[in-house]
Image (tube, rainbow over all chains, first blue to last red; front, side, top):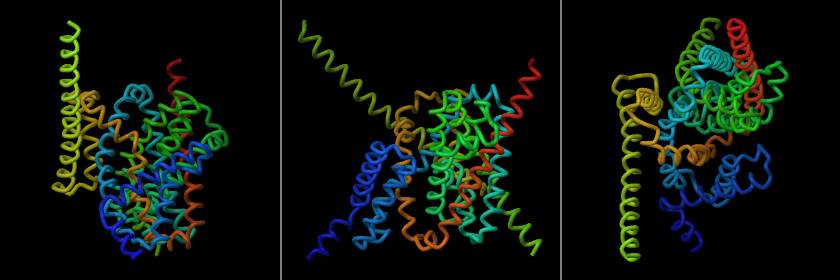
Length: 242
Length: 140
């Protein structure tokens, strides 16, 4: 009897939607109360839903009947990322050379170091592919990961964790490398730690925040182009050496 | 008189309400139309760039050339961008299938995330700072 009720509850589209909304609400509540960056609302929501599904023995496909409708919003969300980029256009024009070169070289070295370090610590190819787009904003990262043939959930996790690391340690890392220029701090944090990092950059100051949010879009587009090229050349070099 | 004003106001509200409804649909049409165009281009020309990112580039060009104004798509845009992180939940819940991978490799994943974030912030920051300092010197 009990099992039957559970089946009625889960066997429709609403289940996935309601549990996602509820979990996110709890996530936001905890994050606002504690103000600890590691307790990211999205991370809490995901953890809550996964524990709930495990506890009641519900599989992912059942959840995803509703979940896929939320997932559907990712595509148009990526498209409208053009709007904040356009709003910051004047700022970009003023510092175009510095920003574009910085984001390009930073993203390139970043991807190479992701592939190199992942290989050194012994991660296998499917995980390395998933980690390549970990510094860009999530909707773009998901696209790059599936394009490369990575595991999208691992990418999402890596992107959130990277964002939190960037937000928490970003200012310290900048001090460590003697980066004092406000534009440079903003661009660096936005390139490496997308929107989560940008929230920290906004706390540092207006210029840092604007530069950081501008860099999210630029780094995203550049990584779309750099990622497959860098990954394929890394694989090629690996086979040459072997 | 007051009655007439009230009725007039009521109709104004009604018209406004209808217009905002239509505006939402029009905004959605613009955004989804561009997205669809991006998907079609990406698939039909076999481009290595995903359709949603092509859509973003198309929208950016249309905004720069003033074909579309930010106001034309502002409501749906802020709805999507303000709730962005919520939309990642199903993709994240997909971790259920990969929990074994995370259990066996969590420290490697963490090492990669921390070390590469430090490298990226360092490299990007040093380059931007270097270039903007040199251009400032030229200007002086």
